[in-house]
Picture 1 (tube, rainbow over the protein chains, first blue to last red):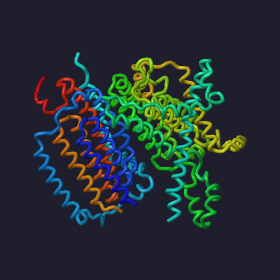
Picture 2: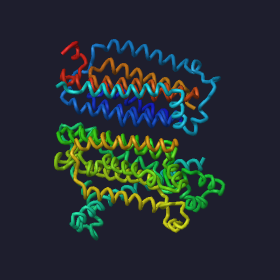
Picture 3: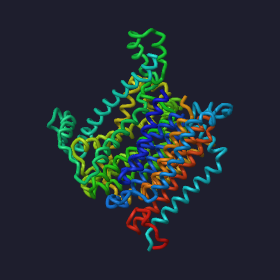
Picture 4: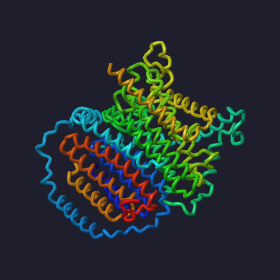
Length: 170
Length: 364
Length: 100
């Protein structure tokens, strides 16, 4: 049952990712990417990380992608729709694709031995089974408190930076 | 095997079907309610021709929407133009999968009565004791509040995409306004909800109501400011007057759905009213104690228990919807800069301060 | 239980797609979205390992990645707005001058 869900979500994810890359204009790309991100959230739910899954939808779809669409509308993409898409870098892409794909095949063939999960103790999964949100929260505010604070400062800096950048010069 | 099939497939399926049907009916009659109320506020009669006092008007409207010609502007992006109304309508319905209408174990008797005719008593008991099967909700997940917020944020995309895909000035302006407005007010709304979560200590909507039952007070009496914030931000989120700038008729012709007609327009129309019901249901669940009667633990008010829990829920949702319409009939529209100022400079600081205050109270 | 390699393979496929997109696409906005896709592929591996090693740290890390993605989107989109305002184009190859 889990496997069926996995294959459905993975199929949607791969299809929409390819569509994102090959779409004729940015707004189509954005729509396809949103679908891909939503099925990614589904995969997170499947992996029992429901808090991160919900945050994925909230942050990516509700925040970042809305921002993308907002900017796409601001810069008036429609007039730039017909610009060329093929790039002179296609050779690099092919080489990279071949290398990464061979790694991928290696991973699928041999991966089961390398990434065996036996023998690694579980310290948190007992709590995680029942209250994923609570355990993530307590971990975030204890062990990872400093990174958490730094992340908040990073957000502030990004916010100020974005405002300063887009401000029109007097 | 058959028990699992019934618990996780058949019963949720029936519940979902029932909710979709009831919700569609509720939306249809909400439009009539709005027209009648607004009419009476303005000393008019409102729809009177179709049926007794216009009671059949929603059906006539629905028929008209379906029969109208479905126009796609020639330069529009046809795919996105078609998708946008669905994107804005579907999340509004999806949210109801986690909103509790009644207490856990609400359908126990009913289920037992029906199932005992077909199954042996052991498996009947197993099904009935499962909260998903017998509860007054489709499902109860431990991230329900986050789920509601994230799913309703998907609905914004429908408005933005619809406005862009129409390839027309006014819809684009409406879409720009709406995305700015909804994103801004979502922040304050999130904070208003967080202060409830602080008290409830759970993200499950069912558990939040149970906490209110255990505490004996609706959260409205503890945090009236948060309720007010949620209501105002809810009005902004659903693009209702006085925050209906995305579709301000007098400035933008029709706003983001100017180019839409026929069935697709009706989907946007339905989405607005469905979102109203969603926000009302959320406010009722978080602040007005969901299916609980007022002051559930006061003994001499026990007679209020005569009214079934679902009826309490529906009455409260109706009251908030009434308030929504009343506000629409009373207040003028904000200007856009006023709207953004209120969102960022008034509501957000209040919400932040509110969260800090209540966190401090809880800590002490 | 789904074998861990399934998830890793999926993440790798997504990462390859994202990388190819960044290299092939010349539109800044689409390139940006491909980067988001790559970040998501990495997130998937984090969550996968967090599940299969029974440690929550992977999920925390994903939250940080999302924070960085949000910050990056804000600054990057601001840059894109400036680029389109100055160069009147979203083609990265057009943005080849060091100074306006």
